[in-house]
Image 1 (tube, rainbow, N blue to C red):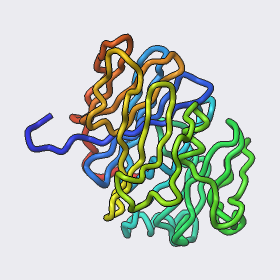
Image 2 (image 1 turned 180 degrees about the vertical axis):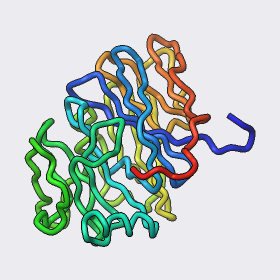
Image 3 (image 1 turned 90 degrees about the vertical axis):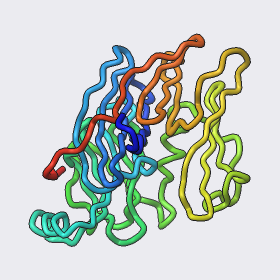
Length: 268
């Protein structure tokens, strides 16, 4: 990575019934690339670049790893003009279903009402989206899927649904953690790995990890994402690079810092 460049930020979504991980690589701030990682062979397939914001904590990967449900935002005039041309609506925020590592929508819901968006899988062919009016908000119905709407404005929490579906358990859930800082984290645990979600007074959200087992400890300092795969290996994203840690040894899978978005922008 060139001196002075900010490392890419990486987050991953695991499939609960398949050896698949979707990685979101963010950087520069308004660009995200999606990758599909086969953890059985450790092959990484690069996919779509998205210009705008993909909200990884509002997204989910199907249990079989075949489909990605994601929340997105792009307020550009170009995007809004394209939405009007294609669907006859003003749209700058949406939920979409795609086949990773691509973001091309095979299911689409307009989330430009200020609060809705995102969702989670109930199973590999049933999704619950945080949209209360599917008649108005659904622009593309995904073939072969059952789509459930949000039960009221509260909706489903994609973050906890995704994590608990892949083996995480909540160990501490304060009444309020948004804006409360490190003294009031939202904490989950999976095996020996502890994850703390933190939100500071500026409402910046980030994670911190701890390894709770005795013996050799992995390097989790500055990790933007970590998880245990189906074989018990610890997967770590740190400083724009992805590592695998097992048996006290760390190996690098890939450095994604050099991967830069296309110019000019390509539509998703």
